[in-house]
View 1 (spheres, rainbow, N blue to C red):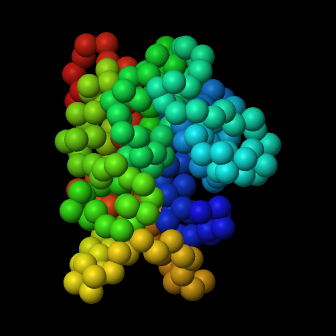
View 2 (tube, rainbow, N blue to C red):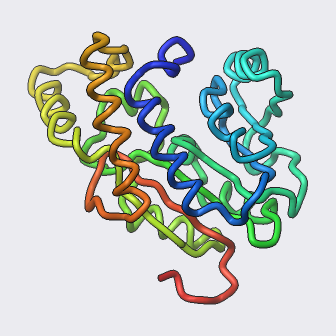
Length: 240
């Protein structure tokens, strides 16, 4: 993962979309205190640092060591909900393709709610469309893929209300569906698709995927391979 996340179209394009979402839905102007949960090898930290001071946790020892070396940050270890974090501390908490790895997603989100500062917000990105389940999900140790309904149900059960939801990775959806259908017909597992394409194709896919950021901040795409959701602690008001 660390070898490809600097240049692969999916990682680069996703960072553009996430940047646009944070810019549009940040809880307050100025530098923020940000927590990334499940930072992996640290590929998102530089992007997040443009918005303020970043802290991170990562349960995998090897990924955590790589992220610390890569970013110079002291990355905390441990698994939610038992990671020692300061209550009421963070303006923004992000879980970027992390929630689908956690068996008790509601319990994890509930634990994180208390870590937000007053007015703080949560940003999630998760894989969508359960019918797309494949060897890719198995290889990456996913517990589930979400629908808009199941993601919002988990967020609501954890005491949050949704502020914005966006599907993304929509333009490539037909191609991704086609590849996974072919893999199923041919009996392929499909778990070995994490390779950087040839440079011209990678540039094209990066541009196409990254261009979705304009629609994502407006919630205009009806369906996509991924879902993003911005939420805040629910004080009893409407979720819409």
